[in-house]
Length: 197
Image (tube, rainbow, N blue to C red; front, top):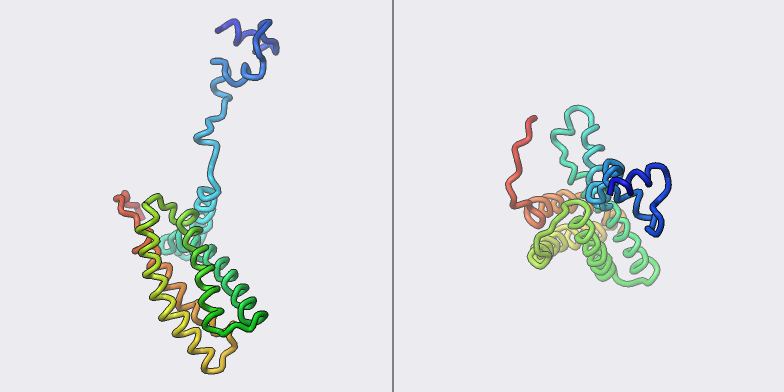
């Protein structure tokens, strides 16, 4: 084996042996071989690290109050809220469907997407999806009845433009949904070490 390493160091391989693997498999190159378990990060891991870095730079001690999952939730749900508004515009503005039907269909699509993205990117949940989906369904039904139809349709009935009504309902909805997702749907049941403040 030492003869192979010596031959590789001077840029040639012994006759008859393949050369493609020598650079990465010789004992003398062990320190230069990347550890794929460490080197490969998923997009979800990078998203979480980015949220942690942003939260760590918040001023006035907010880094101790705002969890990185809140920033992740805000980013993901802002995106899915945009999806919701686009679908609402298509359903009601272009196709002239009734407001409650348009709100309902846009809501179902956007919240299905929000569940998948938050589960994967923000909360990194590996718990059984069935139980979480059932809890999420209950949370979403309560949210839908109270905030979306209640506040959203209520403001529309009072004469607010339907996009503005949906934005007002969305502000109330955001607080409720983050709390429910963090502490009910995706709660972490494994004990966490105490963090020093």
